[in-house]
Length: 398
Image 1 (spheres, helix red, strand yellow):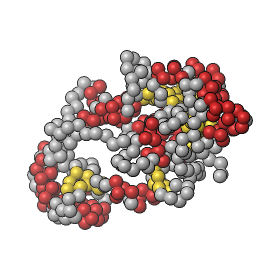
Image 2 (image 1 turned 90 degrees about the vertical axis):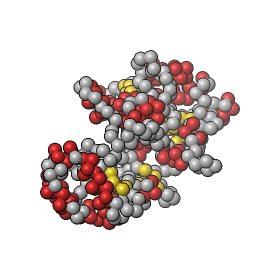
Image 3 (image 1 turned 180 degrees about the vertical axis):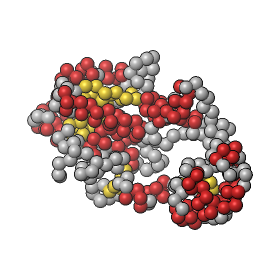
Image 4 (image 1 turned 135 degrees about the vertical axis):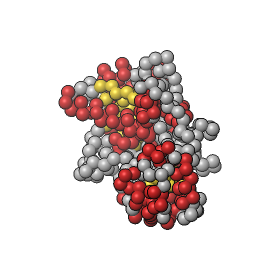
């Protein structure tokens, strides 16, 4: 395989579930050698998350653990810790999201690992940060990123509906992207100074960053109320509408002065330009409820496919409310590089969400089975065949 951006970069992924491992996955997409540390037996608990009842297929695992080599290692055993230390001694990046007390118990906190390798980037990810009364608490993206930061409350349809549950990984993946950014920033600093260091991120901090527009308003002591119902929008031209075939799209017409007349002509309601209720931006906002009612009637008269052509023809910014199936078969997803084939040609996966001109990503390899690369990883680290058999005999390796 041709050299990639991170060819030769050694990453020890000693994390579980999603957010920490996602950062390692992104590094692997650009050629890093990622060694996935898992407990013997069932491995990373994320493997056991089966989204379809009765179907034991590791759908999630194939996404989060592509390109990685699995080492099933008992870190509770002193010999297992010794193996990890040997790997860390010449690694570039160590990633963990184990709870802080677990790191201390397994002797893989910064004070244990950083003295082994002055060039090491220790990437620490937690639920709630590493200071304060809740630093040791466990959390998932649904609890720390989504619920705790106000997002779950703010995205409900209106104040009368219950809070909305998040999708699996919805906060973990952007949080993992934030951790990746911290790692790459630290690698850049290492190029300048020769020194490694510790980088930290958390679900709580990333969730607040995702909700930062609303939060910043409150920081200026202004009230942030829940959004009004759809039929009472603050701006009827930036709202979602139902079509005749029971589909939805969302319109985002913010340049009203330039685009409004074209829109009204395209939908056959140019008469509204003379209606005093809608003649100015201020009037349209004051009468958004009435304008929404008018547009509801207009858009309910045709199917989504017709409206797509009409709105595209006059350059209106809008987006269909797509199903997952539609997103999967959307040709633009492939054109922009979001969906890419696995290296074996069997099926697709979701690519890292950015590109670097002149740099090829690694064709995504299938995720490993538990301990699939035990022998290969240990041989690379200098262990002999007898050493490996001894570790197996001790139960240190799966």
